[in-house]
Length: 262
Image: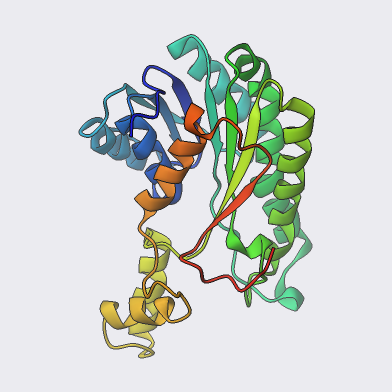
């Protein structure tokens, strides 16, 4: 399916790896000019090189820490200077530490809020006029934890909910000019899952990587966890006119693992 977004420009944050990278890849394959972002300049360069091998559009990387307001201003400004405008903003951020409530400090709460919520607030604030000019759209990558709390993830369970409230509010305030939606990923085979499985192997909890993946897949009706590109392709779809009447929605992408009715 031709999504009709060739020649557009997208900024995808936290996209040197994981689900952000997969979203950038899906957009680049559609011919979108993509700016990817990360804090590690070496990893960023490697990701740019990898994406350029499959891209139909241009791919460039801009190093920035999205928990810092000035870095966000620079990121948006350089994106617009490079491509002359902005059509799609895809917000993504690394996951906060895995901890129970009583072991989570005030500093960790504030850091999670800055990274997960204020990064989106600031990115939208800096991008909105450029998006408005092009009847663009915003897609926020959050987590299935906004539907169902996940054990030992009090920060993700709590703080990410604010992003969904923001998405719904923005969709009503800006819907005539900018569509705003969210995707809620469950477990996908990213480097984070790979690291968790490797740690489980080292602790003797599983005997192989395959057994570790099977353990993660146990509660998924489809019998497997997701591949990152499967989420990326939904993001690309939401950025296209094929999704022109989708606004203010939060789409679980978890293989049916969530038991929530809503």
